[in-house]
Image 1: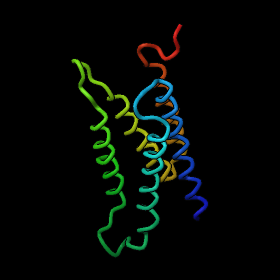
Image 2: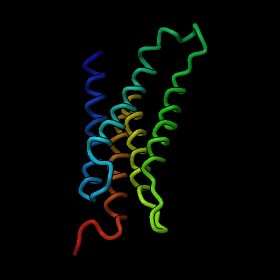
Image 3: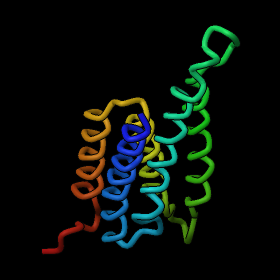
Image 4: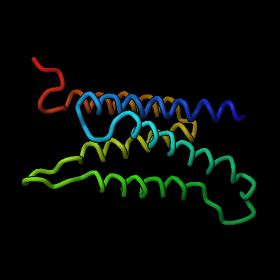
Length: 139
């Protein structure tokens, strides 16, 4: 069981790092380490909510989905700190949204929805790259 959890954490970190690499290449404030840590942390909280507290199911009113909902709130707080209004322009909004998605990808890995997590990572990378203005690939 610990090896499966270790694998989940590695996968979440790698998927988050993939998003962060694109953000670093686009010269954005949050990069590989930030995205990897957010994704891995969300996965860890999800794993904790489903495994460590299984002993409480049926004994108390414990609800594992509460941890996932708090991840959304916590990442929203981090994201809000990244958003800056500067000279009539909003900056950091895509980075904040990307971190929010990285957390969701981590939750997906934590709940063993691997295909969903990988698909969401690829889709997010496509959004980051294809919709970048000015174009990511000059020419």
